[in-house]
Image (cartoon, rainbow, N blue to C red; front, side, top):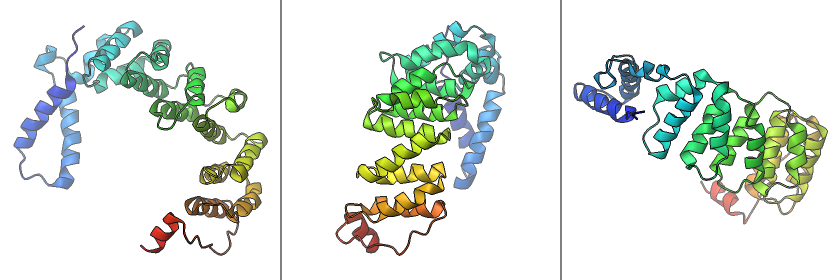
Amino acid sequence: MKLHDFDAKFYDYVRVQMAMMPALKEDEIEEKYNQMMQSWLNAPATWLDGVKPVDYFKRYDAPKDLMKLLEGYLTRDIGLPEPLYARIVEIGEPCAEALTRFAGDRDRPAALRSTAIALLRDIGSEKPADLYIELVCRAKDGDDLAELACDALKDMDIDLSEKLLSRYDGATTFGRMMLLEVLVKQGKGDRVYDILVDGLRRDAERRGLYAGLLADMGDERAVEPLKAAAALSDLRYLDYLEIRDAIESLGGDPGQPREFNGDPDYETMRNM
């Protein structure tokens, strides 16, 4: 299979077109760019033997061929053609097993793993749920792959609450916060509420995050614990602002604003 560099061909086309429109205003460039993309995709291309770029990958129906192309583009650092991405999504679930293997293989390039997750998410597959949970549970700060997995879990319509809660205690600190994000998105109740309220009281480093999740949960019981947290002596100013916003979003009265003299964020914002 030949890997045509669609991006390079398109940018060559754009350079020629832009040279013919030197007076183009900045606010017109994006509109013209999108128009050029559509024109280029739908015009027969000599470098594809007369096939339109938008149709080129429709010749491939077998998931193994599409996966070979996907891997080839991303391991050789050639821009992934949008029509190939669209074709994989169109074929859909038959590609899910191989994509899940790519996403979970630590020896694969990060670009291939993250693209596999994006494709699985667009396909709407439930196959990688266990893999996503595993990625989230061992997440570290700045773990982009775990963030993608977390977002994919949020999109799933299946009830994962028992699996998520069973993994909560053994997850990393960052993993726990991601698990809670998914659980709140799934609308799961009392145990999640209790975890959030306990975190709000005990976890001084992440009180603002717990407050935001309580607000997203929409449970009015959280107003009183949030008010108590807003009065804590070791509270940081930015967390305090998140707590006040959460109280208001749940229909409560946050009361008169506190002063945080000496807090660097408070001093910076006060002097702006």
